Length: 438
Ligand SMILES: Cc1ncc(COP(=O)(O)O)c(C=O)c1O
Image (cartoon, helix red, strand yellow):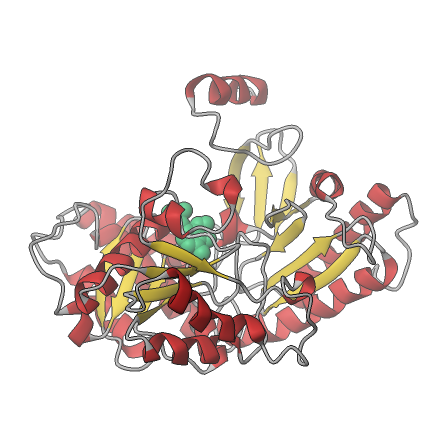
């Protein structure tokens, strides 16, 4: 099929609510490590990795060889018949999970992982109400939509009940109009007020992303989650860390984003980067909490032998190649490059993130901070023209999100910065020749 035929059939046969990027949709053909090619043969440096999912490179042969061998041996068994691949993965997960977390529930997506986490906290505590954060994203089921704190992703139907939203740590646009650190991290302390005024006072738990992904890589001040954790514990809830985007070394140095904030969660959810492209969802918790889950359950594809060998291979590569360290070092280099662009282009209001999870928020005016969503779309289009794929997000559609594979080099970052410089220059009609063009 030609590019145009694929686009036409995509429009004709798929739900239009399933949104695509770019003014002219990019039709993918093949990919290898940090590169992706479209059907017209154009090569791109992929700095979004299929929505923060390609952690060790597209079609990494160290993963795909194992997938192929497993497909030929045993492709499916279901949760009612144990297999070696799933226990090898679960055992490995238990060794890297923080604190007492050692039991896994494997499913197919981040949405399912969060559903399972909320169910688990509810059955464990015998309570119902969950605190989530504004600007967060938790997935597309009714519960996950209810947890989500952005109207754009929950417009279809009323979400499930039993969720209230606290103010998120969005320092660039502080809802209290305060400045860190003089604010005393008021947004964190306000969670207690939310519990006292918007719930029965006895909550099942709290769920948050250590860095809000779809929210536009909103990064909290270091004390935020520690303060919130203590409040949640005071009111008897379980703490759920949604590591769907921040897990598996993405933020540098640590396996999980929450580990940067000195909080040991009760429950962790993950997906995306764990599978490097195979569909997987994971809910992990302490034995005491896992054992409180009542009734019988199956997950037809949960712990599938093919996805399990893929996930185990991904973890092994991250460990063997010290990719958490690489994410930190190369991430710092990336951050410096982005700050160089910020010095040059007024359009860039803030640069934020950690490791190889870096975002930039675009504003029409740095004083008023009026969001610049049209310019964001144009930067995406122009970066694509310059051979770089990036993502976007944010409640106002004005945040650029970048999450390359964890095994990229500084040279890849330099290439990305040059492409971004070109894109910003075109959008702002400046020359792409400044210090940022490294
Ligand atoms: C933080 C977070 N949680 C949950 C999800 C839902 O994951 P999935 O799309 O695999 O259902 C996403 C998806 O983007 C996410 O970013």
